[in-house]
Length: 125
Image 1 (cartoon, rainbow, N blue to C red):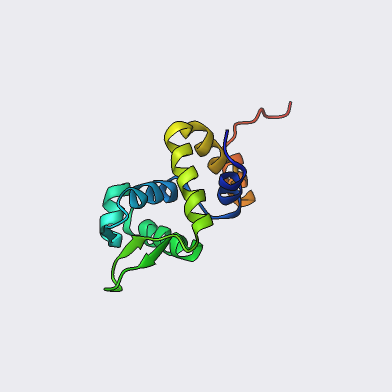
Image 2: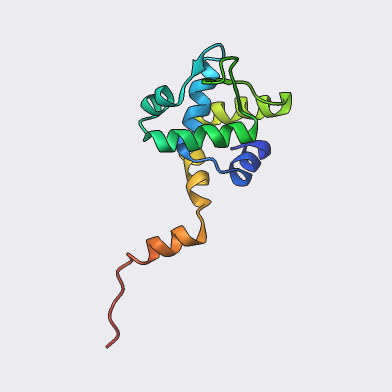
């Protein structure tokens, strides 16, 4: 069962599975700094996707620029966010299917319409 704050975070933010993977990765190495290229390689995503993930996580207050301004480090903006991210990481490691189903259930109408376009339908007689 996901805690209400974790559900709220997933539903109210632009989190995708790669976002959660980035959070888990960076949270596990709180003293490490990550550049976008390294993050892209570690997450197996294109550089453009890694840039978007970094920007999203900065906007959410999950990561912050390091002193050099070229790398990011895990540093939740508030203690409440840090606690929620701890619960998210725990849920992701113990309830992977539940977390990913919730993430994937929050599609945009455009994405659903695109997917529906490929649904095979019977021709009317």
